Length: 337
Ligand SMILES: Nc1ncnc2c1ncn2[C@@H]1O[C@H](COP(=O)(O)OP(=O)(O)OP(=O)(O)O)[C@@H](O)[C@H]1O
Ligand code: SF4
Ligand SMILES: [Mg+2]
Image (cartoon, rainbow, N blue to C red):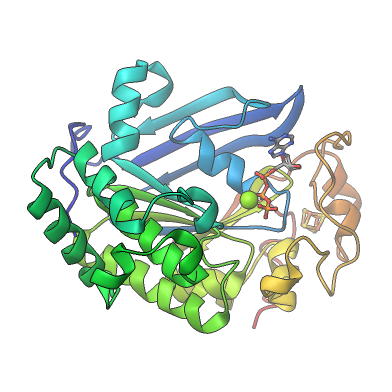
């Protein structure tokens, strides 16, 4: 696996790998992500968790400027190693997408070309990064498969995507994402479609990549147990807003936002995707619905107070990088595990 060696110079000492400030994403005039701010350090594994429709994928796609046509960034700033991404030209952006920031998605099979053998697809990705020699291409493809725990590399290279299991396809996608030695890997629900055993293997692979190459990972999931197993730090999103953040151990031991407490109570699995939380009624409001000014979770919150609906609650710092935008954040540890 290649360590990061991309063309963008660092922004100077102390500059985060990624710095997002007051990000707003709209879909046909409706706010889908609203005032999101966070940063990521080099080599960090940062999770984003929230129910279906909270704006996780839009946030992820906005970083390499790959939002779907219907969506657009309507405000805020996205800085990668100190450089504002929206200010870059298409050529520079393409370089960053190819060499610095890579993405893997939930449906690996959909991202592979069904008509080309795996070997050909990997070779094409390697060629994009400058390798022309056929024998070396093949050896590099095999080495890559090997380093990512794909045994029987020779055989896999000769197969078509439909001949591989979902877990194998995801390994191949991750292998291809790692070819350029990215500094940042964005993984949007990469294990959601997989069986639990395979899911654990993919998480181990991501851990290994992070350990061995120092590639930072922005890992998106609706499943808190997966986030807990992999991430150093986590952001909790609800209805387009960041409602809680903190180191994983701290946030899981002392969840402070009522939404996070609800999520932890539910511990959703792959089959709960898109369903309401078991122990909290209601669901994430669709973006077309007018959102009241206060806490977006108030209509579902079992402990809401009258003041919760007046204005969006300020983020309360709880120490050690843990904070929550909930008026009851400092109340007690009730609801923790
Ligand atoms: N291409 C699109 N066209 C219209 N609405 C969209 C589009 N993409 C996202 N949305 C809407 O924007 C909101 C946020 O979507 P997003 O995909 O970011 O959610 P998510 O948190 O990733 O959810 P999931 O867990 O289901 O993947 C949702 O209400 C969704 O319906
Ligand atoms: S701010 Fe109020 S409504 Fe929102 S989660 Fe906290 S207690 Fe519940
Ligand atoms: Mg999504």
